[in-house]
Length: 216
Image 1 (cartoon, rainbow, N blue to C red):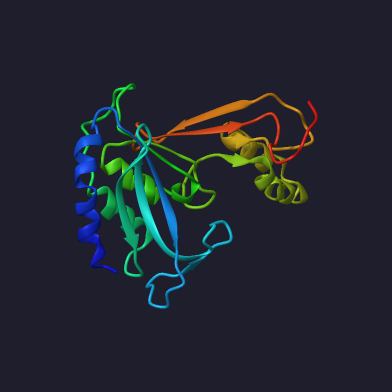
Image 2: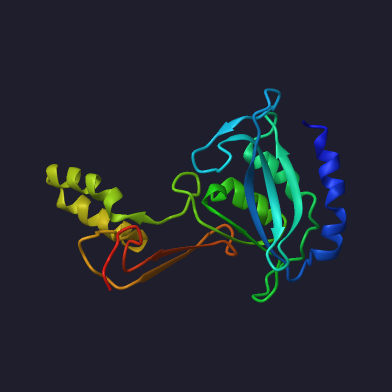
């Protein structure tokens, strides 16, 4: 399957030439499962979310304006998800400093690519990035109240109010209250990475949990 990579690159060279704009491109990055029952498929993945259910995986980059694929790379057993992303992004031209608010290119990814390793690969290309931070591995600073309740209970049991007060003051600006029993308006939290001020994290807490049906 590794012999496919040179062909994959050649197939999309003209699409990249005509549709990739280093200043204004809007791109989407995602993986796709190719349904296959062949016994010689090198990478076989099982998934209840995908329609095909089983097969090999390819990573794709698509232009969101024209809905045209600009790059595709098969993920083999020799490469990890991050390594395959690195190889696929290498096929796209680098952008300039890309600090203007109205300039691109912008790359959008779902939570499956929301870890810091993936973010760093995109930043190396000077692309703007919008993604959903993964629960583990994203290094985002925000913590829901429910995740800290057990630690607060331990401090209360130890009867050390000064430690509890110090902890509450430290964590206050990063805490996102997620008590479903309390009705609040929408809240927005922001943070900036100290070592890279161009990297921002935003937490949005909605009024309702969309998974719970409510009468309007």
